[in-house]
Image (cartoon, rainbow, N blue to C red; front, side):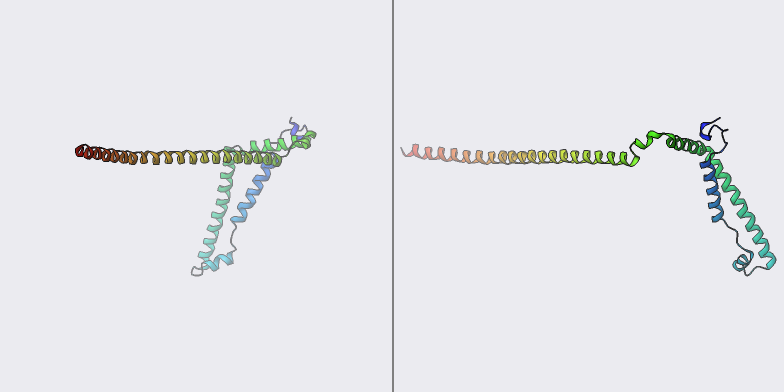
Length: 180
């Protein structure tokens, strides 16, 4: 017994799974349609009518075989990936949701997505602000480093000037000592 079926016996295939398989079969059939004999004959005008008929029969057999193979492969993939179980679970959740009178009070998925999106946007805005402040701080530090480099480059220039002044003073004293 299963409550999903109103207390009735569990069906071997759920409605959603059945609908999926029917839709797939209809889609395959619309893609792989047979060609009328007259149209087929027009496609092979150089063949005799007997050859055209044999080709057409072969074509129908190939199309029929393709239908079967594709449907079998689809069925195999559905079984392998447990699509039926997933669809049954979805069906059960939908039924439980429709029976849950409190579900109308819950926030919708779109509300949750909107709230999450707004929170992420706020976080991105905050992080951008932090990044801008860090970049400004780095620019200030780089400017200080450049200023200190320029000052240290000026220091050797001052040492040269002082050295020249000393040399000038010493030579001036030397000339004064000689004259005295």
